[in-house]
Image: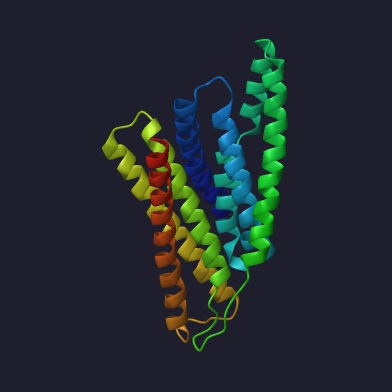
Amino acid sequence: MNQLFAVALGGACGAVLRFMVSTGVYHWLGRGFPYGTLAVNVIGSLLLGLLTEALVLNRIAFALDYRAAILVGFIGAFTTFSTFSLETVYLLQQGQAVKALLNVAVSVGVCLLAIWLGLLCGKALAGQTLPGPDGLFPYGIILVNVFGAFLISAVATALLPKVPLAIEQQLTLMIVLGFSYLGLSGLYVLLYLLEHGSAYPAQARGLALGFTANTLAGLLGLGLGWWAVRQLAKLGG
């Protein structure tokens, strides 16, 4: 039942974020091509590859609900194969066979590439630690979390203004997304440390250091994502 609730919660968040991203992309690029569906599938594939090593292959025993919420619920609801299929059929019915074939080729090819790149990055980083007097310091997972924070911030900064929401609602969504990510990623750092030998309260300082370092690094990633998109907007405008 716990896993069922976790999947439901992750799925709700993923579905809402998919709506915001795809709607923002369509407002930005138009509906002449399935840009929105392509965007969510590519981003979701990259995140799935990146998080597979950290959340599955490290096999943290008491994080099953956590893994289910993210991999099955959140990413499963964020990505969509059915919409991709429907939009491809619509293009064929409209006599746009070239666009339909392009949609299939780009979606499959780029999503496979994104999964591969995500797996490479995850394998290179997840599980990398430094020993210390207060236990392990999981810098690899923290770097993965920083990249996730950067990606979330960049996507939200670029696309939320394209969604028909009041500025107060946009700011609220960005704050909720940012702090939810920081909380969940910090929780995973704690779970990882506890699973790999850190004990509470004996090594409480090491646990606090890992959580604090992840939070500060995540804030840096969120800030860099916002800054990067703003700089690109200035160059383009």
